[in-house]
Image 1 (spheres, rainbow, N blue to C red):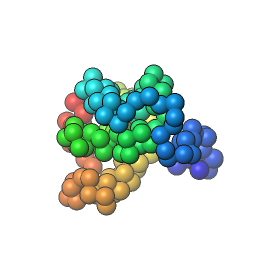
Image 2 (cartoon, rainbow, N blue to C red; image 1 turned 30 degrees about the vertical axis):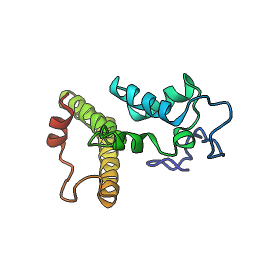
Image 3 (cartoon, one colour; image 1 turned 180 degrees about the vertical axis):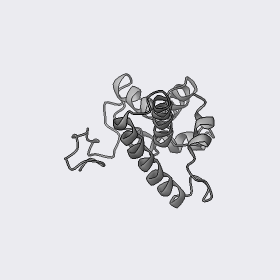
Image 4 (cartoon, rainbow, N blue to C red; image 1 turned 60 degrees about the horizontal axis):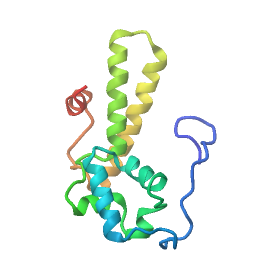
Length: 152
């Protein structure tokens, strides 16, 4: 797939296991995996960190293959899912950091461009999450509102 803001091809990413069934060598049951996900989330791990830890340390290649639900679905059922999705929160933090940098370095044109690209990604994601009804339809991106949300 092409990169979002360039005319180049993207980096190749890792591929998911082809089989959607539980591998024979996974010794954990559904209940144990659910408890692991909840425990790791309560320790302060993000959803992507939980997936990586389960893969690398516990030998669970795919939570969905073992449990039948994704990590976010498990946390939603346990009423632990954060209000804002992880990807948009990371973009919010990045935009706040860039704005803070630009306050001190007003002539940094490269980071002005980086801020434009980051905010366009944010707006695109907001449009998607409004369609999926994960955020309210009257919410809009305001840098000051996001700065208060991040508290950096």
